[in-house]
Image 1 (cartoon, rainbow, N blue to C red):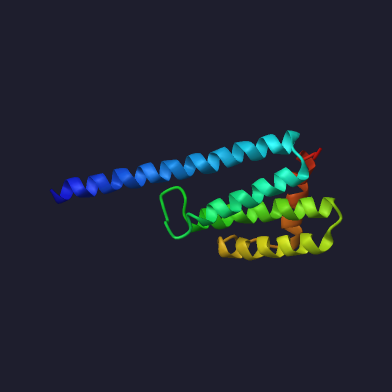
Image 2: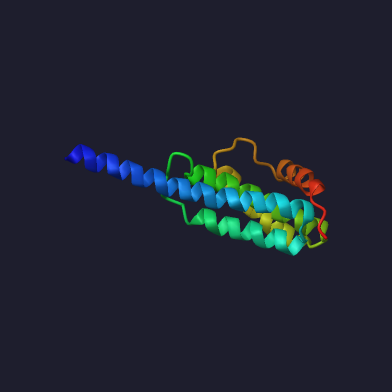
Length: 132
């Protein structure tokens, strides 16, 4: 009896994690589309929405979505946001987002976390994005 309950619990956990992956994948596809054809505002909104979505899974520590993955994804979101702000000439907002990215870089366990490296990466990402 206990075996069947344990198996049922694993199945339920797998279904929940699958739903989480679908939601995040949908956001990633939308971000790719917005990178090509969206406005800067819509792109920023979706980045922030994905960051909030990721936070809903913090502490669950699933097989695929765990706190380190969340920290890494959010770091990349903040790098993108900083790059958008830099492109728009809003240095103060860029600095705020870059500060958050640096904090998460260390938290996620990366050994190389310099502002210049993250900014360079953000510039590469931003070069793909041409807002309407």
